[in-house]
Length: 323
Image (cartoon, rainbow, N blue to C red; front, side):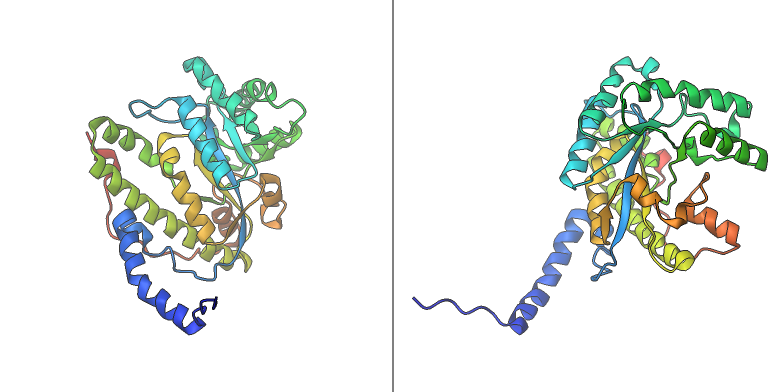
């Protein structure tokens, strides 16, 4: 038998070129505008990123038929499918009193091998707390539910609720001093896509059976994700001359469960390699912890105006959808 001839590199290239319009059309039909820049960086520079998930066990409204446990299982399924080695879950333990059954979310997180850490008992914003002492008490109240499930493991990370690290020097320095004396490290944030803004309209539109609006939301959101990835890379190179290890902030909400697979796929296309939170924060870029976003904080300290990334025109008015 004569073995079939393999096509030449030139023939393969011609065939791939011929298929590109078809692939672009298929992408557009499936994802709309969100696929427009997915191939923008064919030789993506690799970068490390740690995935973190806030507001366990309860975040945002639930669409009909969904449960807190179901959302947790979907998050964990997606993390496993993408080979994420660790995703710290930051806990607001006060939610357990409001929704007692949600305690199963914390147990599922640990059974899947992912760690828990403290996000404050009531998600108390430091800038709006009655006093620094009241905020410190809220941090302490949040410890028991986490420590009970993290025996022998490292749970002493703290994520500032709403990333509020103090709006004056006394709060900033007092909060950091308290955390450090209590054995905490700040879980910083360098990138996020504000997916929490979509939770309420998603729940409303799902309840209304408005699938067309949900599809439009998805298209807009994934376009925002791609711009956010581009902005992150641009600003990191501007500040540090390289894409430093990143820490992604997400939330355990229904919209995140519906879109996380697509978000991680886009991060991977951009060069993402998943690492632990400790590995990401070993980088010197994280030497000066605080509130807010890492790169904006560094830019403010250095007196640098961060480069912007072009955005599309006005998008969906999320708060008015499906009312």
